[in-house]
Length: 379
Image (cartoon, rainbow, N blue to C red; front, top):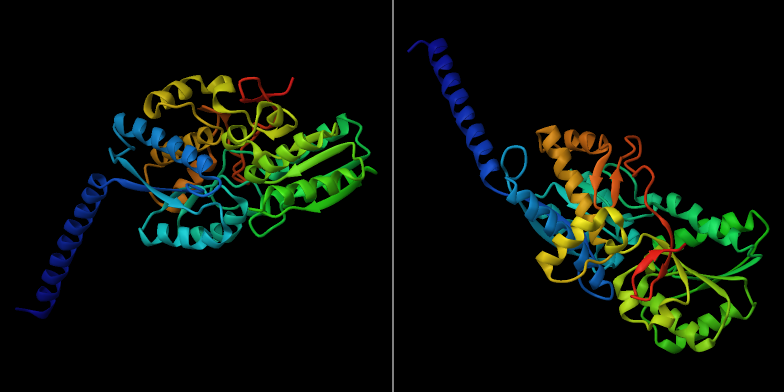
């Protein structure tokens, strides 16, 4: 056979083989579920929070699959990645996701975790719909929950509404406290810039009750106009108990990381109502979440918590972006995700700023605990 004809024949065979291979891959992709990672503190001290987040995604996935799946009929399944809210487990959790060949993740939740592993996800073409609030965790992807720069002004306005001239801060500034430290740093700068005196008292995690009572006594020694508690909820519980025992009448504001069903479950009503909180209310208190609450209760036979509502919406805007893009390509889906505008979510209307990936007009307010031990907006 002539050399040119032989080369042409071989080229044709290779082309046909490549076409068959590509067709088989596309068919396989349509038949095999898209694996979606959900990273958060699914065990440990913050386990109640992480499990609620996981359930929110499970509900969104169940609804999507029942409706026929994604744009090409592809169904979705979930890969839970438990980081226990610990910075030391951030990269191992991300590596477990990357090793599975997963390209989309809901989470992480804790800012200390996100500061450690979001860059790893992005470098490996895993697109995050992140739940961290520290502005340092921003980047490729998007979020539906408030960021530091959106929570901070709400806290500052509250402190100023009290006319507070002196503020004592109990702050988790440990390795796992990136968010709590960042929020306290932001508020301190704003208050000191307006002449308010601020005392900073560091707080560690997983200490005995006596430790928190001592830290609180130090904070109250200066008779501050306002006590600001920037911790995660397990430490916030201990501070609330110590406050009750101390009988102090100082005004108290707890940061967003204390807004968790675990907080109200582990405190008495009087302890839970001793402070107000910056954050978002529990799902049953959000007017736009009525359908979500009913569906969640039907599926899981329990009342939803605070942050599962946000993971539910996170998964839904991701699925909508994939469907609009008609693609699973990292950059293509990321562009579609940032074009989210007026999406009707359980947490309200969702529009993503295409420049930052932040939610426009993120829902955040000053909350209190109701007589039913639910987080509601302070009137």
